[in-house]
Amino acid sequence: MITDYGLYRAWLADETDAYVVACGEMIAELCTAGVNREKILLSVIPIRSGFEQTKQQTTCRAQLKFLPDLPLVLMMVGSFGVDKVTQMYQAAVLEGDHHQSQFAAIGIIAAIASPQSQVNETY
Image (tube, rainbow, N blue to C red):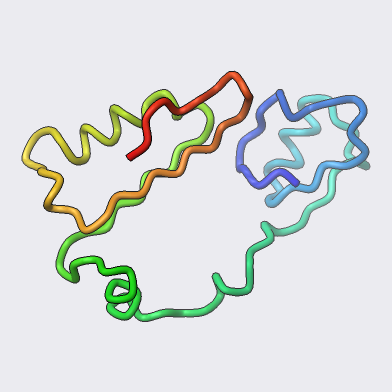
């Protein structure tokens, strides 16, 4: 299942029986890369049922003990942005007009594509 909206050649392998993609544009990209159209299935990105539930922001902030008036920041990077996580964090929190206390919480999600990639710092 390919859940990204762009093709990474590392995903391609002759031994693959089928590619399941989340959007029609990926069908064209895979075909252009030489994948037989019969091996490509269009689906949707699977999500847990809990993500479909609407929750009140104030209730969630209280449960997580986040200050109600400060912004929450979530940084998400893929394998090509992992090496920039530290720079992103510093730019958002430590430099310029911002100071760490101006944020209720900062979360960083980094997807690692290969065993050689690694995030050396955790915040």
